[in-house]
Length: 216
Image (cartoon, rainbow, N blue to C red; front, side, top):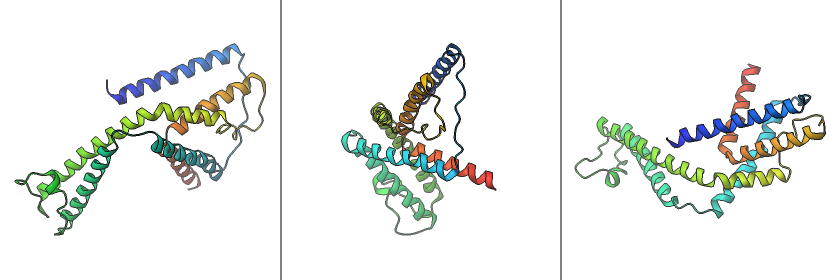
């Protein structure tokens, strides 16, 4: 089973567990009354999510500095190779004479890269794809290794009061319902922070696209 399939299975089991627990709680507590949620403008929503984006950036920087990555040099080498390949692709496409940067490093002497050669251009595209895929694998290895640590950091921040649902609820109902909402809020905010700044950036882009569509 691949990592993606394992991840999907884990997420599916987690979502199923949350739904089952929620259903049991709703039934046992005789269906708690609905919570009134405030109506936010797009700018306010982006500002709210943007604060988590900034916090997530800080957490990522903290992890980068204090948690060593054993594959850092390998990733840097792959990133450099991809950069050289991209420059060579540009040089070949523009038939430039100063772009033979990759051939001496990744191709044998009997298969030189020549500007304007369509066959070599295809070879470079394939090489770039291979290097990028390998680099992505190393990124995923790193992400999976630090995910528990990042989630714990996000959980601690949430317990200290940095939560996303608090600003959405107009009038807390008190009692067990507030406790349940705070628990969900803590877990949800920690998960959003653990998802990284790129995931939060996607949320912001989605809000902007939704707003643009709604006002069009």
